[in-house]
Amino acid sequence: MKIRVMKKRDWKKCLELWQNIPEMGLNSIDDTKEGIVRFLRRNPKTCFVAETDGIFAGTIIAGHDGRRGYIYHTAVLPQFRRCGIATALLQAATDALKKQGIAKVALLVFSDNESGNTFWENHGFTKRSDITYRNKVISDAEMVRNREEK
Image (cartoon, rainbow, N blue to C red; front, side, top):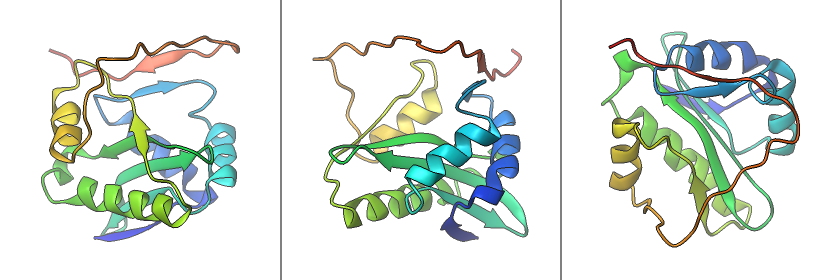
């Protein structure tokens, strides 16, 4: 397995990977070629892919606003889970954020994503109960939540 910085040319393989992750939520603005490239332009050294035998096995998108880091789209294909890929991606992203002077990182996880919430808890991310997350849509974006059929 090789962890490397995500490049703009990787957008299509990243999107294909995310579309194959049942727990992912994607939207029609941020998760397009233009949205991914825009994010990478702002954060060229903090996003990573994991490749194994030419396959994109995992991704992590991380960036910051100069004060706090944010993690998005941490995903590993089901057949590559429990091999340390997500942990290696997280380490690469947090190391890159530290190098840019960022001391704290935040992320969002769907409440019903048990494996995701367990992963983040096992890596020291705590659940906040003292704040209310608020969101306002200012551009129409279609949200698609990948779901396993039960």
